Image 1 (cartoon, rainbow, N blue to C red):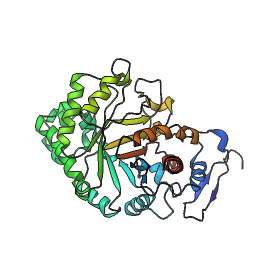
Image 2: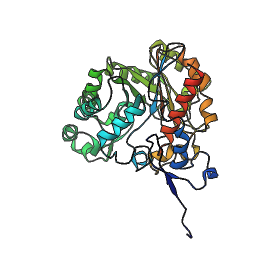
Image 3: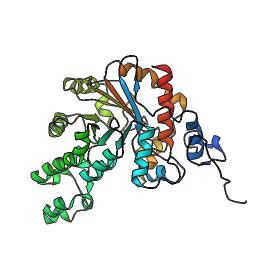
Image 4: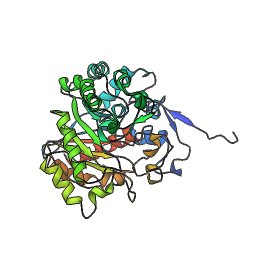
Length: 358
């Protein structure tokens, strides 16, 4: 065939879905296509199905930062063919991994009805980490995505804006955002399946007294719901602020989200190992695709279109070992959720941890 890439498929005997095989897997080590990524996952297909208990006594849960991205739900990529409904997909995912991050709660306030379905479709020991809504961390949201009850209460000049910040809202509506967020996740709280709320602050959130007060305010608003903080500005960890940042989190027992991501950019955070709460340590893997990390006007998933090599994952084994000695529980989430890249790397890392740390 002229001008067309040749693609073949393969069916695995262990129930793995059919996967398109990339005709030239060496073309790009970190973006080889779903077929090559899927082939890497075959030998470690069941490695992450259960929480890992280390010699230090820490429980490590490994999963992905999404289970519904369209590139992940495409036929034959991660889910078995025929698993087309929301129920079938979450049931399959929860049989594969012990934890997932809810990304949708960043864009829209959660619904208790939907959260009840999540509880019904997962085992009692399955854990959800939920991303805080954009308005809860100083970021804008699309006005049309707000619940009707909030939209109808907006002053006319605000209702006409395509995007809003929390600072734009009257105080009673700001309070309402937090109350509706917690109400929407209440079924997960009641079932004991809400692991933490991820407060991911934007790159324009700098280390000031006001910022630290906002973090403490967020924790107070969340009450008994556990939260964790991720920064997206390098200024929190420059020579002047690094020690103060970690001391602030430690003094207030707020879990610090350790990250692996692109380096050398304004929003780059170094891959520090720091456990600032004995209850929980978190690591999020964003991929290392620096050329798209701060790009605008591209699909969000393109920022995370990166398949880690096994050597890159192995860099984290001593770091995870160190953190596991200081925290009772660890959540490790692959945010490189393009196609099956995150699920493959989650399985591979789980296999490495079982072999090296247990």
